[in-house]
Picture (cartoon, helix red, strand yellow):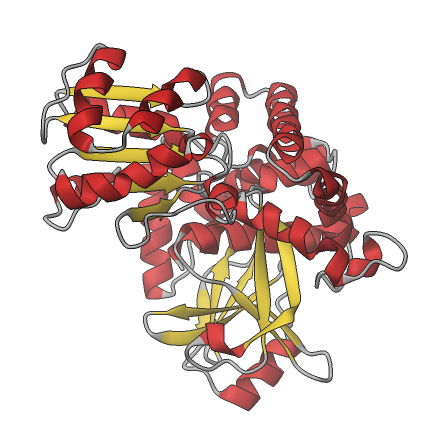
Length: 426
């Protein structure tokens, strides 16, 4: 909401494209914002009203569209006072292109376009994307801070931030409480419907049912919005991600998909999953230098599921094993925890990479924070021994490093110790 409010009042405002994976809450957020900040909302859904596309095929000039859209929606569209919403806009290329003309000739109209598969759509060769004529924002599942807010734990969040900023331990009782919430979050994840139902019922079985429905909708999208020869490959890659994360080395390995698999065979499938927002891909950096993007090795990467709750559902992990840290999960805890951290860092706006030396020393994440390149090491329990991090620090001498684990806050030997529940502070 903070971003949307700033967008509304900006004198440089352009039509906004809000993208993100299916069911992260895009439509709900936009409509809630519209009802709160505008006199009325004119809402158009290209999935539920496929005939709507005919209007845009006739003309995409704002002067032509506004009177017709007002009639279709039953809302008088007023400059500056009406929020126009184009939902599932990836299904109508002409509607997406019309944003250019609203930007150029009718900027006084406030428009937000949303879509679950916008990244996939706009990368098709036949799509003409309005480059430079829109603002673009990616929406992610709720992070653990938003989960805590939903749980009514505002005071706990304040205490976490205070301890993070001052590198002082949390009181042990609060630390244990926050760790308990962290483990609940691993199971529930950040999909708004899952969080809502969990808080209302505390029923992990109901939450798992919703998660399975979301996973099924992802599979349907892979069939509906993908090339026929890529559907099976995309499903193979997606099903294999939990296998990749169960390995000690979580770097993506094609051979784990099937015997003899090669990059050329599956790279389009991986790209589809990344563009859809269903998975996140982070590349290895050969050297941690600015800009990190220029130092990436495009042949070495890791993949993570966009939501850790969906990861647990996909792996069919029961809630009790996560809540009570069952030893049976030992092979998966590391990958699950890395997945959680990746989603938290991404939600905070970080572009994540990882580092690996020629001799196999590996740091889980490398990010740029406040202008500094910072290594981030992740441990699933209280064990914070990190030989690879020591190798990295000896080689590159970062201003400081971050160690995420179940341990309380602290700062020693130029390493900032941060509990996993506080990853949103980074």
